[in-house]
Length: 117
Image (cartoon, rainbow, N blue to C red):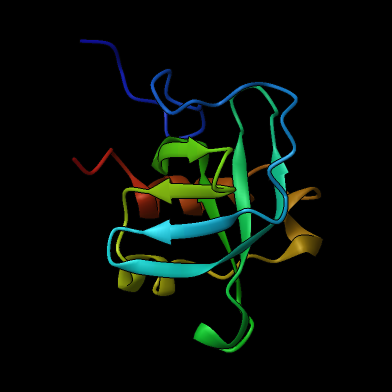
């Protein structure tokens, strides 16, 4: 078994490099959580930023690429392997820190940890 990397798109998700998924709806295991406002394809640091809108008072959340189960380009939806509560309780995304502080993404890696099956 290969080591799981939370920052890499899993090969069976339907992810294709260069596909613009901004605006896609994001579905947790128990319902919709918002829309993608930003995504990164950076090698070893790929992620989504989800605008949760009114669901959790406009909080932006960061989801590492390894949390994605499926990208449905026909429906423009991304399915992740976390519950709404797990996502709601994640560290808040701060756009001013994620570029300037190399250790910033580590807190998300620790929070999301290993894959949930």
